[in-house]
Image 1: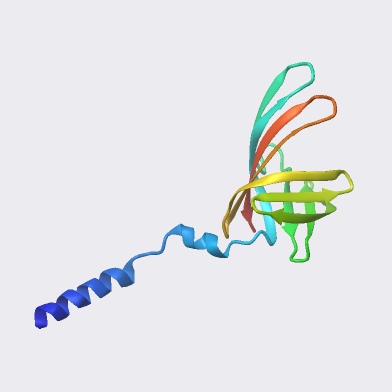
Image 2 (image 1 turned 180 degrees about the vertical axis):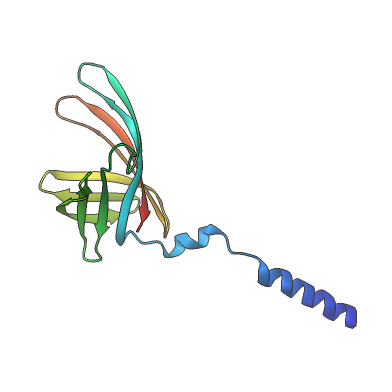
Length: 146
């Protein structure tokens, strides 16, 4: 009986000190809150056939430019851009989420993003499109919650 008690106590101690995985953060994840851009990467193919590859960290060492997205529970979003002098310029949008698709709408029109990942700390959005002039692009944006 004493051995059984020690085995049960040892098993209890092992289970008590084991950590939950980071996936547990995802079950309570919500896009609501303020997200700061940390990285963007992708490519642009211009109408003349030239292509640029893009990979940027924010804020960059030589340029303090970055932006935040503030998603409200009521379906509105505020995008604020910051520059070297720290002053912010804000634009207002509405947003909807259907499955993995985030759609934002503002005075410039609407943009659809694929939500590639969303946790309580990180957000990754993917955008793919083509402009009227034939320019094609794909971007992946990585954000951290602040």
